Image 1 (cartoon, rainbow, N blue to C red):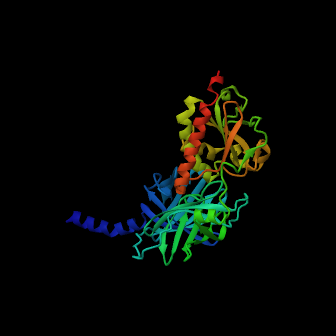
Image 2: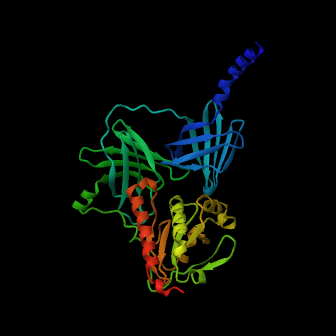
Image 3: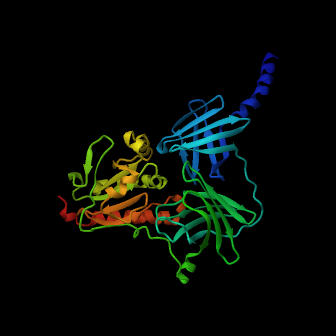
Length: 404
């Protein structure tokens, strides 16, 4: 009888415990300048063992440390030097996501399954071209890549510097509503299919706000409309007959230069990057894999990382960036982001983070690739990776007889 009484008493308490539980998926909204950006976030664990994660398509951006005590949640995302601070009250989470000194208001409730509407949506899958875009880099058009399964859609807008991250959403009331927030790049995209086969888009995010029209690539070619900028043609060098000079300290303070013996007769990828840059996060794991595969054949990668002044004094975010992606190639501190153009004296029309200069065994730049897409860019992401590998393999095969 006593056991039964204790069990009954415990049952009265359990609902209250459940109400204060974080475990599981939550539907969040982020306030970006008055626009509500929906996103998913997940949590597990308790106390000092709590974890949280944002989603970038199928990938998870997982916290490194944090705590959940007395209804107060704090999660640290080290490779972005950001903190999620939320308070759980009456089954609802409220607070902010703080990154680079700016707090973005966050609201979240336990996730619920969305029931299919039963309405068959139009098929908008495949590649589109966004016309009349607003770009500080001189672009006249961007790519839109869409994957679709019934009413569920995902994809990305790809610019010359990289993409939006994977936008996800669904069809409702004649429109596709997609959004993204993975701890970076908050954006909301509303796509309305038009009767003439085009798409009308409303984009709210970090790179563009306002209406855009999307057309199929075949219409672009047929009507001689503006095409997306070729990332292999966007940036060049002043003098192809001269080396690409660099001389910067590594994270231990040791000066590393392009004239060092370790780079002689090597293929060198000079990667302009920054740990604050989301598209650089997209590229880093691929470069780490590329380096591990080809370093034994003569490949070197040198990342020139440009950071904010406080990060240069104590590059905790860059160290976390290196650790997260298992980077074994050379990483140097190039200086503040504002100083990059004056220090990269060989670069012409360089304005994309990241940008990679491909240097042959003779020490000269053979090609330049601006930006880097993420998995949300689908076939264009796979194409860029294949082009990187093909270029590296071609350069490794050249002039091998000159190696000493």
